[in-house]
Length: 463
Image (cartoon, rainbow, N blue to C red; front, side, top):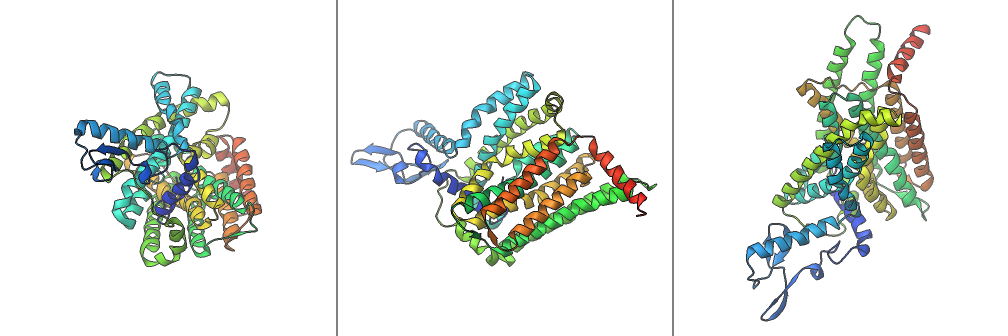
């Protein structure tokens, strides 16, 4: 899921709005509208009036002054109308049919491949609904509190899947899914944005200050992975406990990264808010109707989160059997497949707004989401593992660390001039494809062997 004028705040919600507007012509009468023609009308003694008089629990669908029908008749009708508008708000909601199928398959013990596939498809629309509920509940809270709420729930699907895997002590799944979410955003999504935006245009311009700030924070986060991996290699022949030292380093680094993220929020919302004015202008080009009030949005947030947790539990539990059946590595599942679950809806909206030549908004969604994973979600998982007694560290395998560093380096080079074109997008897509192929053939037991070879080579050259 993606960030915004605050990370995953106004930009992401407005990006989704652009996507909804682009396909609104294909929706039904109660689909993406929100104007007065979509309001239900009731007949009174003086003719028809719009149902625009009283606020109901669910928000903007209202009852007429002289509609004297009892509440038990009006409220269900309004609830059905709101539900219909929410479900037709995004075509990815068609996949909601897989939610009950995924839960049933897991509860009844179907084949692991079927359980994985059904719950994989089920989480995609649930992620979109979770993002929608977060936007709705954050509106009345204001920019600051709304941004913090979006920062918490913006990547909730990845966080929930990782918490389930962490609880089951599947640290490789946690690490690979975090790295995969970052790579898919800065390479796959940004590459698609550059290609879509470059279609029919010589180049597109964007705010270099905002982009360079985000990319610099990504460089810091890559350093936070390189240092533990390097320390682990350096301690290979030490008599001290490498595991203990890496844990201390990882937990201290996680705290520092969380502090940097809080400082970035303050930088973006308060002290240097003017730097993000271009992105905000693109996001606020029109007012957006909000269907739910905070109570209804909060209830929806809780319900959808519960369904995501259930589907994530079955998804994670089936990974080991799927890996053995399909003869693919756990790292490939976590790095390539799982990020699709939480980011599919955001991927589409980012590409749509890039096609509309709103590159500041698209870059805020793509790079901002990666930054949030690197500076907020991953460090938070390290702290959570510390609390529950699971040794989650920032020591990724050497190959993964090198891949992350190269990816951040490539992105920094491409965005430093403040312009993009389709060729640069093709470069990013090519880089992501190469990385995906590499991890497809990368066995799970290769990490320790690779590290020992690095240490042995260093000894041979006298380092």
